Amino acid sequence: MPGEELARDIYATGFYRQKTKSIRGAMRVLLEEFDGEVPRRLDDLLRLPGVARKTANVVAAELGHAQGIVVDTHVRRLSQRLGLTRNEDPVKIERDLQRIVPRADWARFPHLLIWHGRRICDARRPACESCVLVDLCQSARV
Ligand code: SF4
Image (cartoon, helix red, strand yellow):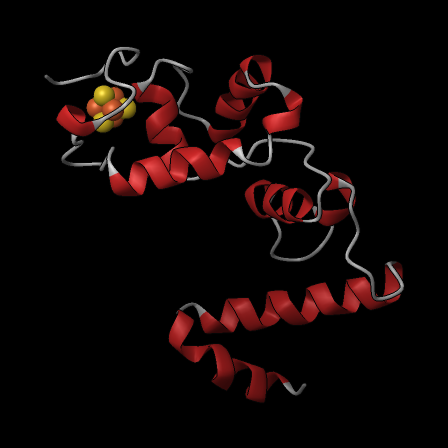
């Protein structure tokens, strides 16, 4: 697909110039180095332009080969509030979570925190009075 056409298609997502460059670069690397297949290994995914650790972890987990734990804004906030980490850096938070979350749950654990973060443990107004984790949480405000 020509770059201009791709840029038009993804314009509404924001940062479309950089994203166009990354998507085209990732497609080229997939074709040239991976026979057009999305690789399963985290180290290989990280070689794709525009793919950093969070995205690589998401793709690997969704392909059924989780090799880490996705740390996004919800996972970071919930992990800190629940006392699962004292770190700010996503890579260090991921290491802390890897030590306590069974490997079999690495793919679904972030989904649980993300949904809990969206529905109950809001960044500004956590609904502690409705939270099932209230007895376990060091940050509960009740
Ligand atoms: S008790 Fe409050 S701060 Fe703790 S996880 Fe629940 S909503 Fe978040």
